[in-house]
Structures are given as structure tokens and as C-alpha cells.
Amino acid sequence: MVETFLVTGGAGYVGSHLVLSLVEQGARVTILDNLRTGHRAAVAPGADFVEADLADAATLEQVFTAQRFDAVFHFASLSQVGESMRDPMRYLADNVGNGIRLIEACVRHGVNRFVLSSTAALFNVADSRLIDETALIDPQSAYGDSKWMIERALHWAGRVHGLRHACLRYFNAAGADPDGRLGEDHRPESHLIPLVIDAALGRRPPLDVFGDDYPTRDGTCIRDYVHVTDLAQAHLLALRQLDHGSLVWNLGNGNGHSVREVITAVERISGLTVPFQIAPRRPGDAPALVAASDRAKAAGWQPVLDDLDAIVATALAWRKAHPEGYGN
Ligand code: UFG
Image (cartoon, rainbow, N blue to C red):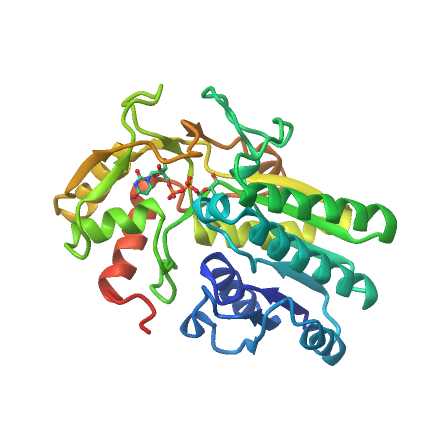
């Protein structure tokens, strides 16, 4: 039987990669996306597309009435840490309000599987410990807290209404579809790897390295970059695991790379020089965030593009082929 899924934010970066995997598996997919940060060109052929905001309750109701979904994947959200610290109420109202509206629609329409795109921004770990699912939740941004509030709403929807849910906390999603069909195009771009690549390609001014006085091996911040296609695979696996109950997974490769190491990797893969300068620290940045993903791996998650060079190579290939990203 063909499975039917709703993917909110399916025209966005991670969401579009998941939609591609679902469509390739023969699933029927409806995307709900307001295209505020997503791209129409990132919608996989074969997926149905509804351009709407989750705050549009009437359209949401229509979408749930038009067909019965086997599960909902929820990506749509505001997702800039820095922006959330300038306008925290907007982040809380929008992300939490939309999340709750979507959960309520699931409950009303008898959809009992829900997969949430969550984040490592839930954590605030000062030392170099690997971060597993039992680490203290202590969001340092309104963005991180908005995701935590949706996780809590899911907890209650599970407890009271039996909604099975998977909270997938990505560390640093990176890279592009290895076959070159999709890539990363945020506007404005704030993520390290696309910024380093564009600096190397001469499409941007020199990169600002935000701080080189952190207590790390070279003074720059360490992050766990995880390939977007491996994240998509984790969603498919999490969906199956929901047959056994709700789950929370931290998703990363367990390898930290500093900002300087990312610069060196881009130089190595591209053969170009990355112009950069040291700039002040960016508020809210933790020195090191590296995942322990033992739970997901015990359930069968096997990242394939799990080294930094492979991640950078796919990102570079997409950017070279799409200098304007998805265009205008
Ligand atoms: N960085 C720079 N210069 C830049 C951009 C980034 O030095 O121009 C540094 C940052 O300071 C940080 C690292 O590169 O140390 C990675 O920064 P990103 O902005 O790419 O990613 P973050 O780790 O800040 O945030 C990402 C996602 C968030 C998510 C978070 C969870 O963007 O949505 O991971 O850890 F919440």
C-alpha cells in the first residue's frame, strides 16, 4: 500500500532532501511550505505542493481533510539563532504556535505518527563531552527554546492522545544531495560551510571567523557536521521505529571539526584559497557541540557521508553547479 505523508517545510534545506528520499521510495508526499525561506525549485517532482503558512488554520484543515496521512514530518520553522535573540517573542509565537496547531490537527484527524526536526541548540555544554540525549536541556536562544517547547507539546500529545513522536536533534546539517539535485541556499546565508565555499569562490568578501580564543585545540569553535542525506535517512528509520513507541535521537557523526579545520578542508577539496579574518565572538556560540548518536546507531542508523571532506565535496559541487543557488 502506498504511504501518504505531510511534510511541512518540505521546500527547505533538510525537508527537501527528506521529500526526495520519500518520493524515491514510492511514497505519496504533500508539502506545506510558505516559501519564506524554502524554494519552489527544491520541491521534488512528484510531490504535491501547497503554498501556505501553518498559521493559516483554514488551509491546514483543508489539507488534513483532503487526505489521510500516515505520518507528519515537521520542518517548517524560523531557524536563525541570531535573529531569535533580536525578536524572541516572534520565534516563540510562530514556532511554538505553528507546532501546536499542527499537533492538534494530527490529533483531530487521527494521524498518530509525528517526526519533529529539532536541534542541538537545546544544549549548553561547556566542556568537550559528547552530547547524548540525557544531557541537560538548557537552550541559550529563543530559537532553541522554541524547539524544546514543541518537544514538550509532543510529550503531552503522546501522553494524553497517544501521538507517537520522534524528536530528531540535528547537530550541524551540511552538504548537498550527492547526485547534485538539491543543495543549501539560505537567504541570508549564515551557515559556515556555504559561507566558506563562497569566500573561496570569490563570491563573498573574506570570511569572518567568529572568535579564535575559545578553549578548543585551535581556538575556534568545534561543531559536528552531519550530511543532510544521512539526516534524511535517519528520518525514514525513525518513522519505522515509531512502531515501537516515541523516541528522541541526537544526530551527528561524533566528530568535531573546528572553523579552521573546515576552512582547510574547503581549501583541500577545492584547490582554492579561503580568504578569512578573525572577528569577535558571535553571541550565543558554544565552544564545542559534538553528538553521541548511540541511540540512533543502535536502531540501525549508518551515516554514509560521515567525513568532513565528503560533506564539503557535495556542498562544493552543488554550489559550483548553482552559483545563484535556486535562483530567484
Ligand atoms: N562561523 C564563523 N563565521 C561565519 C559563520 C559561522 O566563524 O561567518 C562559525 C560559528 O561561530 C560556529 C560555526 O562556524 O562556531 C558554525 O556556525 P553555523 O552558523 O554554521 O552553525 P551553528 O553551530 O551556529 O548553528 C547550527 C544551526 C542551528 C542549530 C545549531 C545547533 O544553524 O540552527 O547548529 O547546534 F540550532
